[in-house]
Image (cartoon, rainbow, N blue to C red; front, side, top):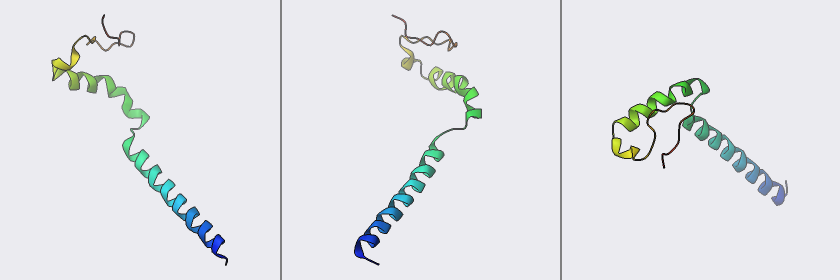
Length: 70
């Protein structure tokens, strides 16, 4: 086996291992689509604990009114 073939196989193996690791890391950090229905409730709990975060922000969290008041 030539040295260029060995170098290519080493880079291909490293690239494959990197792709597997990145796929695992991304899948660990994301949520499944089924858990997104509780997003509004989680936001309400998170931001209503500290009202200082809500300066100028509409707190109703309706689908049509997620805007900043001017």
